[in-house]
Image 1 (cartoon, one colour):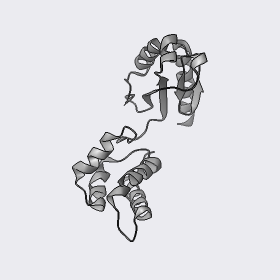
Image 2: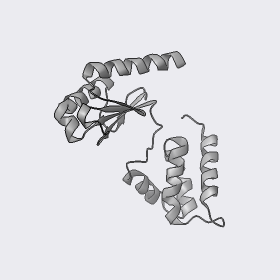
Image 3: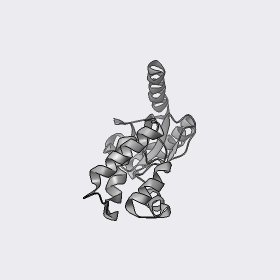
Length: 167
């Protein structure tokens, strides 16, 4: 979700006001506030750290440390599509490692990264409940089983075609 900084500041201000008790924000509310920002914006904007630090009477380093400690929090806008490749044992034993290698090469990025155009994010997942039909991936909210490199390429091509139609 792309937003200008004024809109981003408004969203964060609304979230801070919602969580404040009698106008005060206890440090125990930092995580719920960060979750709310992540849920609304899709990421924690780096330029929001200073304002958050002031709101919670913390240093910028403390707020930054919390954001970077938890893998859930992202500091860059989300990709249009998130591809998760199952890394659990059943999927690995059925060709998951080779599939992951193909996915990395096809997308041109490693795990925990975005493609150069920001269209795809590649993340590991540690079980999609498809052990009997491994290897499995999830693209956004859709689970795909018995995924081969060729099937992955077709899925991505279909997504790319839809994105071009929307643009």
